[in-house]
Length: 266
Image 1 (cartoon, rainbow, N blue to C red):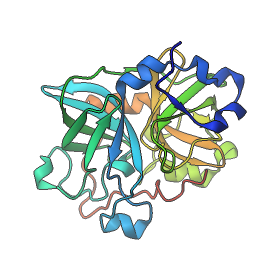
Image 2 (cartoon, one colour):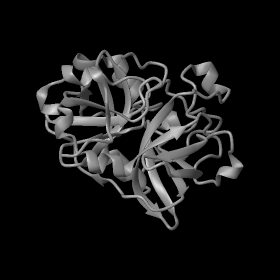
Image 3 (cartoon, one colour):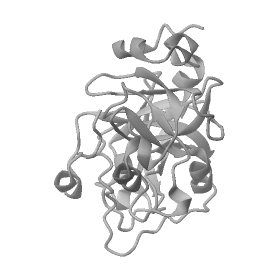
């Protein structure tokens, strides 16, 4: 498979052979992946004041709404202020969204609307791009041990591929505190994690990026990492948000900040 355009993290050589870069679905990954410029600061204080990181977050094209593209990402990348944000034009909440979206071919997209999952680390950006882009296909949760990949911006690097395998998502694996914090502000059985990603090279900057299987389908959105394990919002949760079946209105005066960006510990 041709992966000439994929920049590979050096640490990928330490990953299991089943998640080798040569097996990555490069065409699908590059066609649908995006970077979010102007994602929000990691610290709770900085986020509450709307401060931005110079680094980026990831995202993936998952649908169309008229002339706009629907891009899935992590909620902690997309906004810091919940008040009045859901389903409103960006002009009414200009400080509560990333600056713009960059596609792999260099195209830029302006974010016109942001919709959050009020109970999970998940958001949809409605973006006006310069031209159309391929939609990613969604797939159910992977089997344990199945190879997985993410494509994002660790640190100051851009467009870096990292591989791993599907692992059990439990308190024994990643720690009960991490499980709770990754499940959103109001954890419920609906936001329980179906699986984790054993990914030693995943680190800040991969948040919001799609998690891909070997068939070139998205199985989830990366939320955060701890000790080499990354928590993933499953596609069943994303499909529910796209279909309008999840809560998008947070409680009054709530600030959307489950500190997901602050607890990442590669």
